[in-house]
Structure formats: C-alpha cells, structure tokens
Image (cartoon, rainbow, N blue to C red; front, side):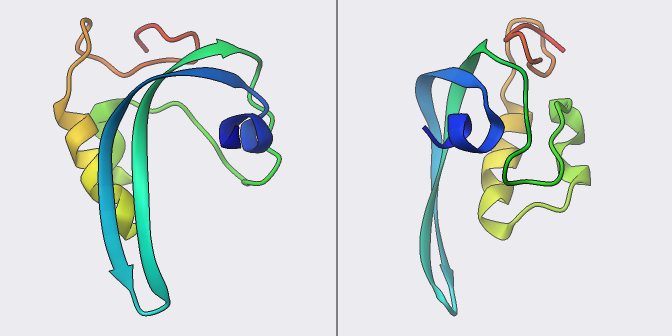
Length: 93
C-alpha cells in the first residue's frame, strides 16, 4: 500500500528480505526490507523528491538512513540469476 501511495506503482511482495531494529533518541524503528516484483505503473513521485533504479554494486555510494544500511549491504551481497540489479520491469538492470 505504501508503494502505491508514495510512488504510484503496483508491486507484488514476494518475501520479507530482512528486518532491522534501530534505536534513536526520538524512538525505536523496525525497518522491513521486502523482495518484490513490479507489476504495473510508472513511478510518479508523490512524497519523495528523487527515485531511481540502481545497481546493487552501487548501493553503498548513496546517503542512506542508518536503519537502511544493513539491508542495503545484505542486498548488495545477494545475487539474482543474472548477478545484477533488478530493473523496473522486474528483470535484470
């Protein structure tokens, strides 16, 4: 639902990839990373100012929230059948 609201696309959640609990001064957060497939729609930014498809090998070059870093590291290590990132059509990028 969040993806539809914030990006205007429909996805199919395939599996939970990783969950990370983080403690900050202002509270605790549980960030859950999902593996998902793009089903329909073109990205339309409704909440965020930027969005892009990136290669897994480049994930550590982005300024990510602390809670997202362990998920990005794990995703970088994970390989799909093509050994590349996943593009907007769900196929290799």
